[in-house]
Length: 564
Image (cartoon, rainbow, N blue to C red; front, side, top):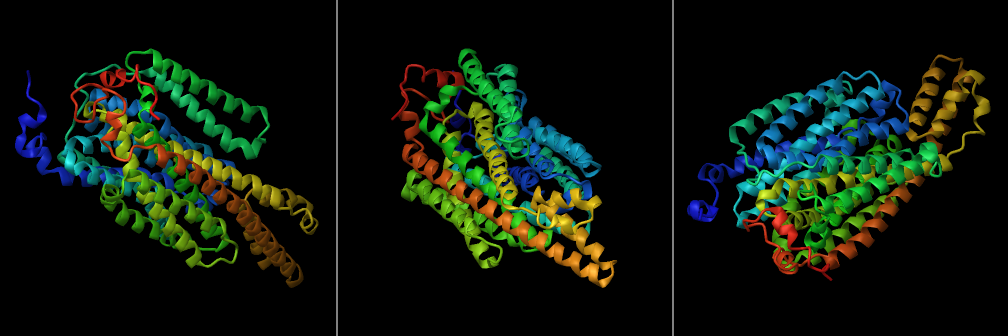
């Protein structure tokens, strides 16, 4: 009988000494790699006006530029986690960084919205290889008594990356063009690649189970079709054949995925895992909180720039309090959870996040920055309380040999939640913006040849800002009478677009507050109050320290009824 890890390395809690002694450096490199790819989700938010003008992108194209990365990222996470388990997680990390950096370079040279969307999509493949590798390597590098704090640090930086992105982009846009937002990734990728080769260990599933290409393909089709329908709803109409068809395709692919995964011996994701309340409710909590967080970042940065007129850098700086809260509160979440239990911690976190969204929903054109900042801080505190215990609940449900897939599921919930949050809240905003704004009474003041361009202001606040800017520039070269008329017209377009944006954003924020309140109550009552309860309540399902492979673990669920 071969010795267990603890018997092999008793002085370092079952971890090889060179890994144990470097575990803090490993954590630093992996967390920085995580921040790099999370920043890429939110960094474009402050660059939206600049990119919109430079590439003449429509609101829907802008939403696809934002969402294409997150969508492909989410779609490839499950197969990427399985690839890391099968062939080695360090190799997956380095390959992902290389793909990410190469495609970021291509994005910086994009000449059209289509080229940028394509480059962002391929960046998502690289990110999908990186993210599950970071968490699974952390799982294998820290002893059990330190793992919760390491995971909490990872989770906090995952959230903080969403807030740091706008600041970094704003800083680059102050001195360089929009392409610098992508180009800045190149030196960072090179640095992290070198550090990863030096410090990061590798690990893999010793069983070497085969991959699941059919299941992976079905999951990608379901995700892509779902988010595609949500994004195109305002553009095509919610009752259009294209939107309804994409939702139907998503539903069919999702059902087929579940049916197929239940039949094969080595699934990418066994649906029976969701019978584990820690796994299922943790996944639901993470999905919902990232839905709200990335939707909030997407709308709030536009609010700061378009409604209050802040520059990209000023908007990034004003979003920074959320990063400070996430970085400071998340590492303390394990202590809070240990004292009050997972359920109370989640309940408190969801309540705070919902209150923050309600604060955002009450913003108007004349609201002060203090109103915005207070709402942001309250929401960030809630997010920081929800993420670490939810993440720990997911990954502690699987043995370490399957940490890549467990990490990938955890990451899928984040990216699906973020992509759907941007899509849903962005679609609510776009739909209500177009229903609130009406410039028909002003169009008679515009020369006939410019009226089509003028009415583009009804598509979104970005095009409206471009129309107002064009009118203001034209006014400078006109005789005083006409110039005054054009300047007044620009002011009316700006005022109407701001009112329409705030009306739509208010409903979007309010909708998100209702969703996370309902889901938060459900998840916080259903999730086990301690991590150890998750294995005891499903019969013989092994914990993360047991030496069984995931199929042995999952197989024990077959005769278990769902927990109550």
